[in-house]
Image (cartoon, rainbow, N blue to C red):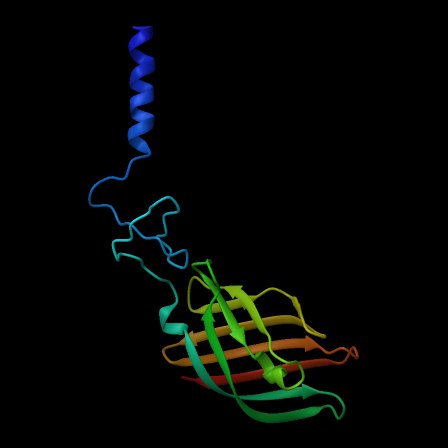
Length: 161
């Protein structure tokens, strides 16, 4: 009995690593059904956050120095997929900071209608918080950052694709 068990265990292990007929085969690391060891893609890749991707025309209000008052601005931001992170998103030009820095984006994850980014250093600016909410083609957001001089700014805005 002992000698029969070992071959059965080995057989079951080898079969468990085989691809089962009819199962999805996705080779794109951006898809949430990505399979690392699959060589042939069958076109079944499925993606999260497709409806959030795109360019948004944004209007925001920023509060901060030199004169502490709200200033209204309009600019564009782009939401793209973070490479090889199925739920990862990148936001380019948050708070229109690309006018002060050559170019940058903030990254975070989203598995529902929200997008929250961890605090992160981007150029000379420290983004302390970013929270976004999506509804159809709309985006609402709040963010805070500290510039290279230690001045704090709060930004609230909305955008449409």
